[in-house]
Image 1 (cartoon, helix red, strand yellow):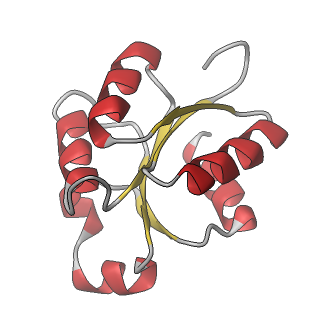
Image 2 (tube, rainbow, N blue to C red):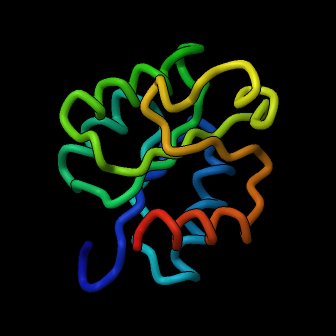
Length: 124
């Protein structure tokens, strides 16, 4: 938390998705911090110690999002981590996202109301 606001790290290689998340978060009194790769995301994670993370599943490598999540989980078991996926619902049927260390999966395109309700529930 920073200045009484929750900090949300958003990692996605798509600039439009990062901008969309930034706008939604800022308009709803969150502080977004952004990264365009898993590697940059981990550096930003260490620097900012966010309250919640939203990470794209497939970026520079197909498993970049899952590798990032596993790396964070080695040091922080409690931070909520949501993965963005263009196959959202299908993904949750095919894998156990808890096994990867995810709190949940968000489908692209992002549903603003769902995102905000997840943030509220996760950051109580």
